[in-house]
Image (cartoon, rainbow over all chains, first blue to last red; front, top):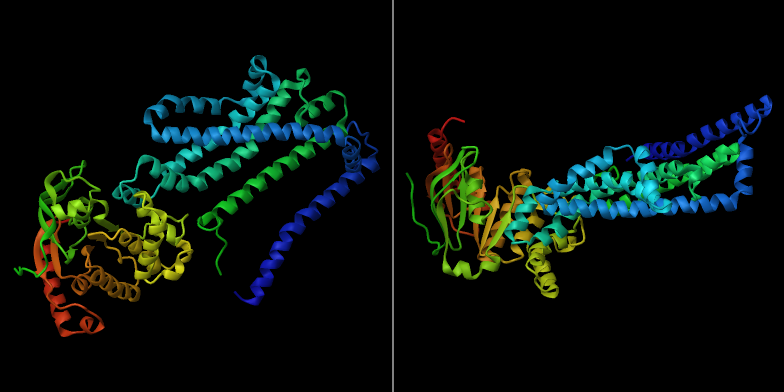
Length: 269
Length: 264
């Protein structure tokens, strides 16, 4: 690689970070300006500075809500990971189990969670209902991806395992699961975002009737109270939570695959 | 028709009237009689569709024949644990495991104690000249080196019979020549038996002590040639008049086999 293209690549990388930041800063400035010049009242549209102020003033409340939502999301995600991978392995080991249960997994997936959440809230205590929603939404991509991965093994490698008389357990552990790893991680990346969505949907469905205190609940509650700045603050926190989850999982993906999988390889010079 | 007996030892595995018809109705092999004799380097040479790879898979036990039988001699049976090594057309390595762990796989599947296993892995890597690459990952290696890893993996169980399915077909000529030489060295050092599937006349003549030429549609043995040139063979042999003559003879046999084969 020549010196010139090195410099070019570096510039490219800097631009990728700097340009969105500039766009964000300009938008916020324009927003602030419009609100001030037009004297828009905060219950219609709060200025960014006011939202920032709300973060400071309401920090105890917002932090607590953030932790509640994050904890639900994380639990839902972990259950989805374990359940999705576990079920996929079970399906892979037994056709009968797959035939018996796969259609129901699909039904769980295709029924809109917004419609299911109110029912769950009737039968389950609220925290459990919220967690169940997060799990339902997040588990299917893990199941589907893991199933695909377990079936995408190299035929010759499978023959090789057969040649050396490998047991089913050995094939699963030494061949199928490692082959499926990139697919599983892909499923988990989707599940991370979805479990947050599931948690939010359930909290919103619970609404004012709920005793919960997650971020989505805060949004609904603040809406009723016309506390628009707090609505924005909670929304920003949800957004940041989503971004952090996405990049955390992308990082795990990179660490796990960087030595061997095509998707994680850097372009070679 | 040239048919010469050869100096090699007693058969270690014999195919009797072996046939294979796929569920689709395609006849891959019919009436195959083949002795694999101890210590020989046997090549199965033929056009694509002659069932040479199928024959190899039947010997390996990866496919059941639909007719006939595969018979292992008593001696080979007692060595049941590690009688076979198989090298595929592609290196067929586990991309998530480094070179050492790839070579270790057969021992791991057979639960060989890890201390002894790592010694044998090191010895196998040494044989193929990759002793320094144990911690490398397959993607970091060239095509030729990956194939060496694949060969090391097949050798690690010290098999009585090494089956190779066009292992060098995807490599460039320079690499292939090098690997041909190295394979011959390993074969002589280990005194193992090799069955080598190829569609290259030159490769089969260079390597083999015996060549079985096969014809296609349906796959069957067409003729058999003994390659009596002495080992060790090297660059001198590759450029000799004797080699050229043997290649011509084999080429003629292959041409006749192809003429005898059905239209594709």
